[in-house]
Amino acid sequence: MRDILDPQGGAAGNRSNIQYSPYRTFTRTEWAALRADTPMTLVPRDLGSLSGLIEDLSIDEVETIYLPMSRLLNLYVAASQELHAVTSRFLGRRDGKVPFIIGVGGSVAVGKSTTARVLKALLARWPDHPRVDLITTDGFLWPNRELEIRGIMHRKGFPESFDTARLLNFLGDVKSGKENVAAPVYSHFHYDIIPGQAIVVDRPDILIVEGLNVLQPARLPRGGEAIPFVSDFFDFSIYLDADPAIIEDWYVRRFMRLRQTAFRDPAAFFHRYATLSVEEAQAKALEIWTTINRVNLDENILPTRRRARLILRKSADHRIESVALRKL
Image (cartoon, rainbow, N blue to C red; front, top):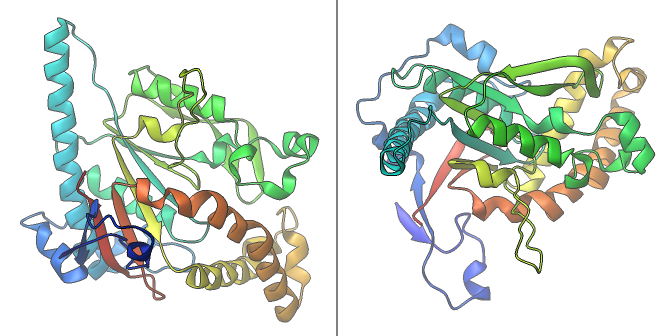
C-alpha cells in the first residue's frame, strides 16, 4: 500500500511541488486482504451472465477485487443511512429512505458494464440493502433524429449528445425518494433510443449509474447559480482505467466479435459492417476509435478520473492490477 501523487504512477510530480496524494493505492494482494470475512455469494454459473463480450469474469477476480469493494460499499451505505436518519431527527421530519447512488465511469470498451453488473449482484446479497437497480446513461442520449438535426451524430457519446436536463431530473426524482421514476431505454442493436420503452426505478436501496461522462463536474456560472451535473447526485464513484492503447485493442476486438454476431442481423444498425473483410473491418474499427472514442476519452472522460472515489486500474488481460482509494 502506498501514497502517490498520481494514482497511475504518472509524471504528475514533475508538474507540481505538492507532495501529498489524495489517493492510497493498493496492489491486488493488499486489496484482497481487505475482504475480511465477507462471504462469497456468487457461484460459477453466475459468472457467464456477468461477464462482458470480450471479458471472462473469474472467481479469483470476484474474490480478490469485488468482494472487498462490496464490503467497503456496504459500510458506506450503512453510514449514509445513519447520517440521513440523524439529519431527519434533527429536522423533526420522517423522510422516507434515500437511495445510495454509485457512479461508474470510464471509456468505451473499458469494462464499465461488467463492473456495474458484478457490483449489482454482490450488493443485492447484503441483507441491509437487497434492492439494487442499475441504469446506463445511454438511455439519456438524444435520439438519432435529434442528433442529426443538431449536426452532432458524429459526436455521439460526447457530453453534448446527452439530454442532460432529463437525466438530472431523473436523478433528482430518484434521490428525493419518488416512486416509479422512468428512464428511457437505449438499444445498442438499433443504435438508438427505443420509443415507448422505459426502465422504472422504484425507490431502490442502491442505484448504480453507469456511463461515459458521469464524473464530469458542474459548470460554474459567474453569477454563482451553478447548474448541477450527474456527479452531484453520487454518494460514491468508481472510474475504470487502463492505458489507452490497451482500450483501443479491446475496442477493436469487441467490434470484430460483434461483426460475427449481432452485426449479421439485417435489422442491426451496423449490419453493413458484417460484409467487410477482416482487414476492412479492423480498419473501420480503428478509424471509429481514433476519430471518435479516443477523442472523447482524451477530451472529456480521462480528465474526470481523479474525481472518482475509487480508481480501478486494469491490465491487458482485463484483470484489475491496482486499486486507488481516495482519502479525502
